[in-house]
Image 1 (cartoon, rainbow, N blue to C red):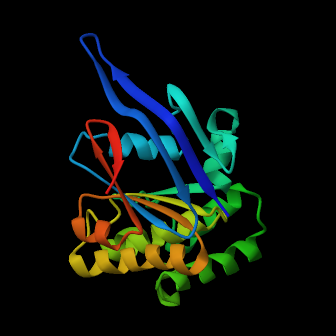
Image 2: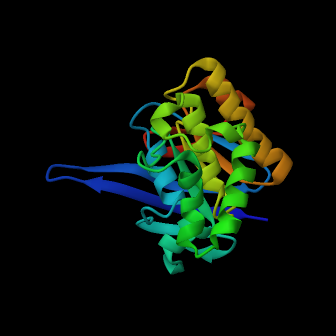
Length: 222
């Protein structure tokens, strides 16, 4: 079971003229088996908070821990390889790799043998509804909804159980967006993943188990 806890964490951006507090003394606990929606206006601190959860940045103060281990003590690159992964609005699939190769890449970086990589990639692509005849296609040959599903499959490839999604439906129409959210809900509720979704979409927030709303860097539960 995965758990992320935060105790009064904060983070700011400094310029020559001012200091902007993107996250102010946030305290929370996130548990596996649930979907959390982080909502708020643009500039409220949502993406900064997600970056902290992903280990891309460290809090300037307070304590952020994953399964009881302080993020500062972790190898954060290894954390993103093995424990947590991020799904972005823009997919970020590698254009010169096929769909199958994109999903196999995280396993290759971990030293998994090629036959095992191919088998696991096929399993993950099937899980997100990508049929076998599309495995050899390149990302640009697929729709936005399909590309996002491939991105989710890739995020699961290394075996981590924490999935962080930054506006995952932002580039999709309503039908494809629903398909993506259904996958994320299933991963949490049926397979025990800890899923965090940054979103502007109120319908997605309503489907989450908990909504965390940010305003001027302050986090509150809805």
